[in-house]
Amino acid sequence: MIFVKSKDADEWLACATLQAALGVKVVRNDDQSPQPRRSRQPRPNGRHDLTITYADGRRAAVEVVSTRDETAMGFSAASTSYTTVSRLTRTWVLVVSPEARIKDLKREAPAALARLEENGTTSLEGRGISDRRPQELRRLRVVSCVSTPPAEGNKAGFYLVQDFTAGWSGGSSDHGDLVVQRCNELLASAEKADVPRKLLASGLSERHAVVVVTFDWLDSLGSIESGALPRIAPTLPKGVDRLWLVIPREPGPIRAIYWLGDGRWRDVVLTEEQLEAPRGLFSG
Image 1: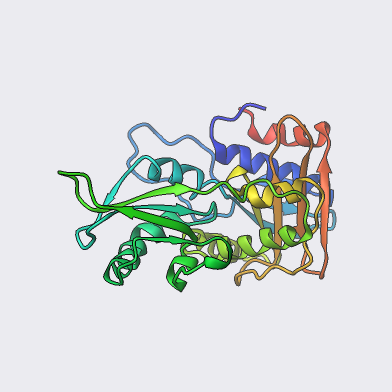
Image 2: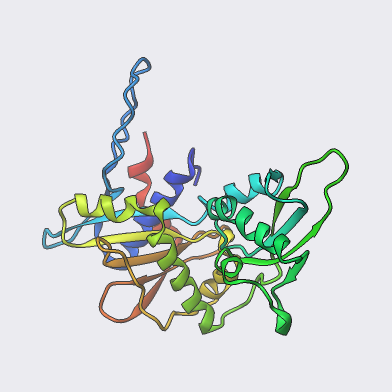
């Protein structure tokens, strides 16, 4: 499969997964027509991504999102940049867990670090029994931090470094639950507020959110790939009543786990034929 945009790849995977698991017809709902060259009007972006049609004529709305939005792109830029903060007197390095949110860190870390400096704290370690992190740093997913006086001529501030030591953790059922909790947070975040909004705007009574789980969620990804099914129900925002987690993997099988609101998790592993099934929706 060759995709021009990652959004196309995500919708392709969602189409293939829904068709394979439910045996339904799925069509794209977004306006995919090209914009006139001279048009200055933005393309409408208020419609859900996909529409399901069941054999009995019932329809359902689907919105597709990816975990790569905040993490892969955000950390790539943040790890190579330095944020200066006038209220600080030291240069800090913050080691943050993979699920940390760049926007939250940029907005809230300066005040948290300033309080550490006021208390005379120059470093904190969040692992083991010596964990002395204040609640705000825990909430921001700061694993540890260390500071030094700024180099001569440099201003105080902080770097962000992603922590990969949690890494690949295998098939523990606890991590099956962890990925559900992280999806709860993702769909409840301000960045994803348009997911329930678009689904509610569809006017359809059945509404699915499909989350494409990428390597940015490394700690959770391994458990899903290896066969774990979560034990807890998702906490979904109003407007979302069904949840799908799809793991893109090439080469190798693509697995998805899904919640249909009936109290149990299911899974599906796509064959090559099922993966190629949506090709007609993405050609031309």
